[in-house]
Image (cartoon, rainbow, N blue to C red; front, side):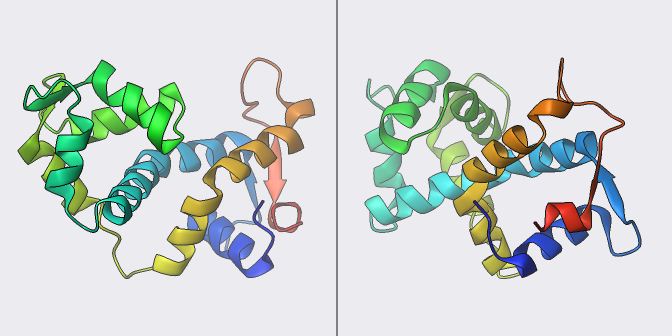
Length: 167
């Protein structure tokens, strides 16, 4: 759970700015969804870099279980779920992010390029790191906090104030 008020304010302001006093649940959901694949890719890159001491080529070889020289969706998702604590949906999103040409498999070059793109920038790094660390708890907290306002998906008219967001 994100429990530091400055982080809450920074997240809220990043999504809707200082001038907007409220945000709809739909807008907040869309904002989190828009950044989540990149954050998940950053998280995967971080885990692989730590596990393989920065050698991402070796990480690719580890992921390539059938030693075919590329990763297909099934192969990647299987390892991502077992070894990197991703859900099936998260693993599939990350796969699509890495599959730069959309060909249905990931080559070594695509993998290394995606990992280079996912290298965290220094801009807002501390905030991005906290969001990345707490992504799952943020999602769970939003679902729990607004469960009574959610019927068949997010209601577009449900609004969230900065004060409520920072509670």
